[in-house]
Length: 501
Image 1 (cartoon, rainbow, N blue to C red):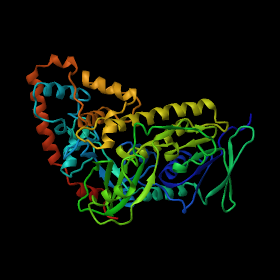
Image 2 (cartoon, one colour):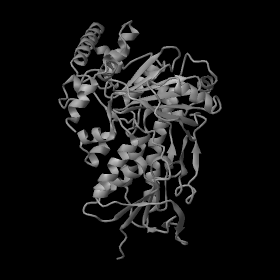
Image 3 (tube, rainbow, N blue to C red):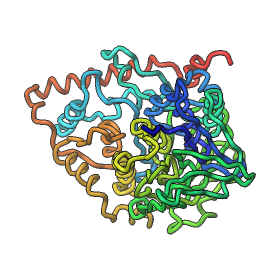
Image 4 (cartoon, helix red, strand yellow):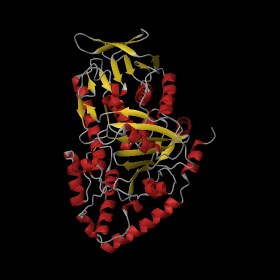
């Protein structure tokens, strides 16, 4: 029987996607069963705006066995308890999308129904009083989830802000120690098997030839292999997500960086603010239909927290995804598989989602069509669920009357999103499939923040007298406030975890 095992994996492109993929493959390839070679060029810039993450980052960091203290020091990271949305409903409106859960340790989804029942009866206290992550973030405090499931602190969740370039460099050092070979160069020639169409070798501008059995396309928006060679096709989602440009600029760090990302709506898009240890990452995402580059740049530079450290860098993009992210022996991971704007910090999650599915479906050398088909199906579903969550922010914006927002308010939304909205407003339920990234707490936070309101709740709650439900909510609110007050400041906790350099 001939050897059908993969012996050579080639990754085209570095940056966050390339080095995350390399680090994961190197970690699971013990003892070594295949070679991993990564080709990148220092002359080719990377997007590098993915400085904010969501809690799924813990899965990847555990997979590659990153030490948190070293990781925090080397990537200049801060902690992140969620995202604040400012101005999305006009004026001084703001709401918070927290990581973690609402309610007490044992409440699960029933908390939403408890609170909805109470508010339908005139209860005056808002849902954000019942999120420990929200209370901590607004007080610039931080604490990790408690391992005790009966503790209020077990309801916390968190992620990180970090310098994406430093993160890639950190992973590169670890990957090379584990045997990943890096080749500096720009690919000038791509060869395919004339019978199968499989990619067989890449040649750099320096004449180096790299042969492989499996090729991972991490070439970013250029998508050199998955689109340039495999013609996988692109599904355009700009009719739902109309922003097509971003400007990114760092500025001086602020004292006591807050443990959350801020997304501030403007007339023609929105602006991000991501506090790191050594600087603040800023950018503005906008639609070229409704604003010129100069106008966007002027708005961005007028709303920085400190002195700019560089000129704004323009990034053009089109929202959507490849129709197939795996074709023959080419797998696209990262921006080569598609682009969803950074509104909910999902870029790095989608990289690790692709990595996780690749590891689960790691092929033999013939790359069966069934394996590629399964990857395309499950990864596509993941991206579409994230898309719907992002569309919710745009389509349900209220209190803004600028042309971009009027366009978004009038557009038809994907049917899956429409179904979720109808379920919530009629029954108080948030209906999700098993594998969706954003869970009930996230959907509840954004639906409430964008103005959706439930008109009913789970009728099983009627077995509890209304006054008992109110008493429970009042006690829990007081406990939440007391628990948040005991947490250390974000900066204090960060220094404590990092310890001496």
